[in-house]
Image 1 (spheres, rainbow, N blue to C red):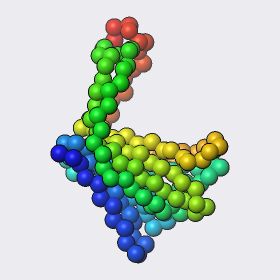
Image 2 (cartoon, rainbow, N blue to C red; image 1 turned 90 degrees about the vertical axis):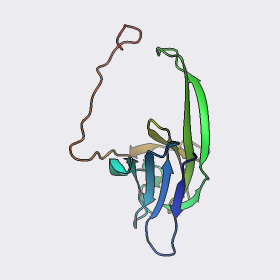
Image 3 (cartoon, rainbow, N blue to C red; image 1 turned 135 degrees about the horizontal axis):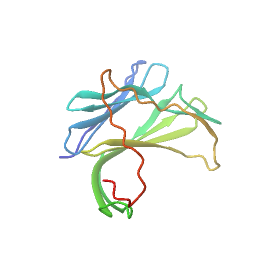
Image 4 (cartoon, rainbow, N blue to C red; image 1 turned 30 degrees about the vertical axis):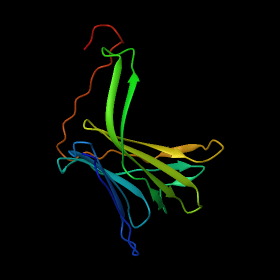
Length: 165
């Protein structure tokens, strides 16, 4: 089943919202612009929050933190990719995801593209700029706000191929 994407755009200053679901529809990443044009996101599993509303954006030579508007949202695509990870126990990896791209415009007309992917195991996003010249990023606003009571496990650093599983 192909996951869905929803974008609500109104004539009022209401927030705009995008929802991308994993192939099994258990995970969802939601991205929205608030009234100030700041981009936030949440992640849910089975409708329960894994990440509460958290900030997104970049600031530096160009400000992609406030005053953003949605220029376009791509249709959801189902993708399957294979890659090689030679340092892993299983070198050949394959994953399937639903993907969508959100294109934003800032107050000065500069473009920021955010590519989202949702697999059955997790979600990911990355920022892309359309600038022909490099831009200096002085601050990444991306944050991760976990619900109160969240438990985490931190894996100790291990050298590759030393027998640690």
